[in-house]
Length: 290
Length: 296
View 1 (cartoon, chains in turn orange, cyan):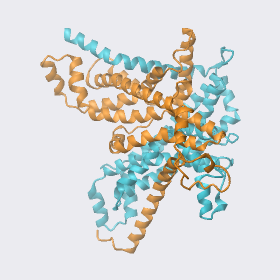
View 2 (view 1 turned 90 degrees about the horizontal axis):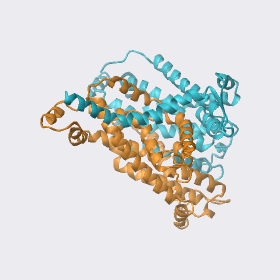
View 3 (view 1 turned 90 degrees about the vertical axis):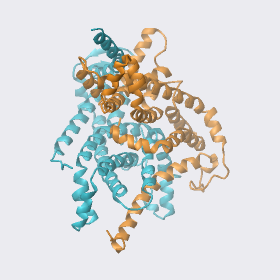
View 4 (view 1 turned 180 degrees about the vertical axis):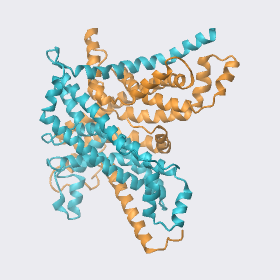
């Protein structure tokens, strides 16, 4: 125990700190740099003698104004908030009853359904995004006008659907841990099945509901490939940012591009700082990655 | 009697929406991937013709696909090795080490995992920029001008630039996974090791590593599946396969053929092959690493 004074220990401690600090710097510096660069004017990026490490000459807030208005990031922000909230509501309303019934009721077909939802865990959205696009485009053709593609409500529905297997898996493994007696007591008191679920069982699953919300919030907010494939005018932030990056890089409007980056990542960073403990704890509960 | 009936109705009502949505938006498209891979489909002509396994035959002779396969395998192997070593190292430091600021480092290391891939692409655009990038200007400042490169432009280097970004993004996630495994190891094992005069490094290899083996094994499957998926998103945003196919990966090639080219049947054939490839690889790795687990 009292080995602290040994010189070897001091050396190893220094090495440990260096390793940790190098990784930390590789994360903090680029992220902080983007924030700084988002306040720079164009002349500070281009040409010889410009130093990317220098502080902005003055805090050029107009970058944000341009990004929000001309590059429509404001609209994309609104769309992203709308789609994320809608998808979160949908996924809870659909997944909670399903997870509850699957984990706590005995009925014919229970096993099969559990297997089906488990199988859904292994199908990544990257594989099926093009068939989904074709399916929606077929529906639009059948309908005679564009409804399913470029529709924010449909996008939210697809986000929710694609993450149902994961969410149901997580929620039902939590429901399984709750003690049996509660439902029986409620039934004896004359509660209906529905009332028992909504008033008694779902409130008890609150910790797992929070975990599910945290993870799905991040996924939906950051989601890119589905939105990029299905959406057009009503795009989301991640997709708007990709276009912005392509446009501003060729036009060398770097300041606006970095302002766009900040607009996308700032809400997530604030969110993360508030919930980081719950998030990393919840991760071990889920132990899964999309 | 009545009770049983109302229970059945309740179960049905609770399950129906989830089952219907999963069927429409997950299973139906998945079946379509397999079905469409047997057809030749044109986007413009809107025709489809059954061609059997002909798409797969073409695929085996498609040089671009084979290059994408090589690149993907290289990426999987290197990302897996680098991430596993670094993530376990940092997990061990943060859960066993006795020093200040452990929580701070844990919080910071997880940040790349919460950022959108598009944001990460933007950040690495700033890092790798050839003239004004953070990396090159840093190297010049410490007088290592010889090491500067066009990180996203030189054909021999660009894939490693993408791999670095993937590792950077993954370390925090897997570190947290390993930390949770390590926190389950009982303290007295470490005390016993230290009483036996075992050095910290020796203890790591004889106690920590064997006891999180199950943990590591699970993550190996994760690495394979998630690297195939993430390499697609990273490449799609950072390089789109360029320069000259040097960073082309499985799913990006699929997406390009299907969504970009309108060769839906061919694209889906790629999807089928990649899907099977990832499952077979995961199964092989799982089998190889199957060894006796130390019970705690």
